[in-house]
Image 1 (tube, rainbow, N blue to C red):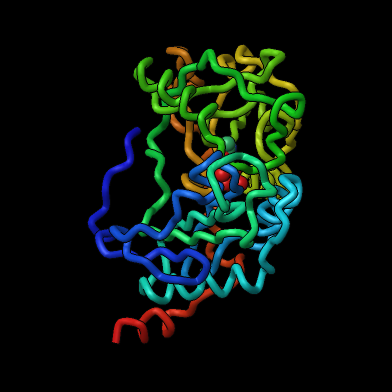
Image 2: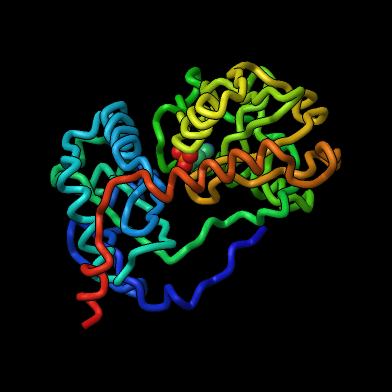
Length: 309
Ligand SMILES: Cc1ncc(COP(=O)(O)O)c(C=O)c1O
């Protein structure tokens, strides 16, 4: 699945430390830590009718990731939310928006990886785009990549960092295999996640998902587990092998960028009937109902309309 360019984003603004730029204008220094070493943490957020779903959880994950990377300074939640609001208003954005929020270690005094070369505080980048959930709801095909997902022994995925090369290598393999995304295994051979989303399976009416040891502590994943609980659907978090997925009744993936999306084939094995299954549908509907009412209000319709007048 290849995302398409959306002309609605022709003239969008993004912000760097509170300063607004057009998408065609450069706003990041080549001395910035994200350019020098991918030394940054990030969150993908989704705006529904002026509300960001699970904003507190996203900001906690960003803060905890930056703390683990020993950033000298981390902006307050209020500062981050004000920066998000400003750029959404400038873009007259209210709904159907995905926000890429990045916090880098900041600009270095000279090229190099040493954090002691950072002397001017972090860089906060807010990049919103008009972007409905990206995955095709008719179902994804996955292929298992040879590249493994690291666990805490190599690079703990509890840090949601910007070194995405591991994912990009897996994505290249999946594309070459004619699949939409890659299944990634952990160092022991158990399923970790895809290159960009978490994986769930349904078997015998039970929802199962891998432990969060070689995948991030997913916010959509957590929401799905909570929804399952509220629906009385039994759920187990455990080590799962590829064979568990091959023989499942249903498989779906989760993430802020694409919400819940059915997986209909893995490594050319048809999953269940090869179509989205009833549990996936039920959970997707319950998720849609939650995002329609939950979330932190960041902008109102009035604010985005006023910006246009
Ligand atoms: C590697 C990876 N897996 C899964 C996800 C989905 O997580 P979430 O539901 O928190 O968006 C992300 C999101 O950023 C990710 O980077």
